[in-house]
Every structure is written in C-alpha cells, then in structure tokens.
Length: 182
Image 1: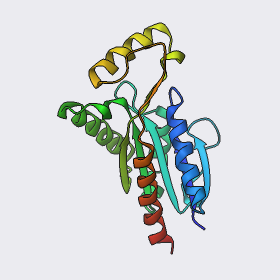
Image 2: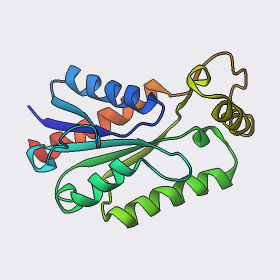
Image 3: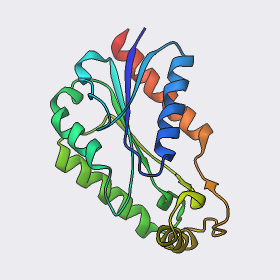
C-alpha cells in the first residue's frame, strides 16, 4: 500500500475541500493517506511517503506562504519521488489567453522560488463563497467573477471545480506512484 501525503494551503476553505476530495479518492483506491494543512500543524517530512500532492490557491498572484515555505524547505526530498501540484484559481474559467499566461507565470515563479518542480501539475477552478466574504472582498470578487464569466449574485455561493476532471488527475497520480512503488 502506497503512503501518500496531501498537503494544502487555503484562504477561504475551498482548497481544503479539494484536498479532502483528493485524499478520499486515494483512500478509496487503497492508499494510506495523510491530509495536512500547511502551517497549521507539525508539517510532515515528505521522506516518509511514496508520493506527495500539494494543493494551494492563488490569491493576489501568489500561493499561500505556508505552502511556499514548506515546498522550499523540502524541495530536494520532493524531487526524489512522484509529486503533484494542484493550483486552485477562478482565473482557470477565463478562456482568454492572457489569464492563462498569468496563471502559468505564477506557477513558474512558485517553482523558481521553491526549487521544486512537481512531476504533475494541474489547474483547478475554485469557488466563490460570497456569503462568507466581508463587503469589500465580496465587491472585489464580484468584479473578478464578472471578468471570468462567473456568478455575480453575491447572495449565494458558487462552486466551479470539475470533480470528474480532478478524479482523472488523481488516477494519473496514483498510476505514477504505483509505477515507482511496485
């Protein structure tokens, strides 16, 4: 049985939901999975695992500081095993090429600063929990959502994650780990 670490950083809680989904999918396939929020507990040493998945969301053009610090501190160890990085952001919804280039640039900055190049990466659309935002953030996120083609009714929450696509990504990662673990 493969041991997998799923480490995540979240700002508004949706990346926690994404990471929990990933962990549940791996457990259902027989993996021994530890789900940990970066910076909230004693962060585990990745050398104890056969594979590592890191999930983080983009806010103000960067990923959570705790995720960046953990990845940088463990970059050498992460390079020695199958790893994946899930980037969660609403800009994934925008079909225009510029937002896609911006997302790619943010990921490349993360890789350059942490010195960790994940084996697999994917971008996942996030959520708009308007009902949990203060008035200023609600206003700002509504403007962003309008540009991205997302929901703008601030009286309700929206979730854009493609769970089927995420399941396929988890399966790809599981196969990668199985190939090195077998």
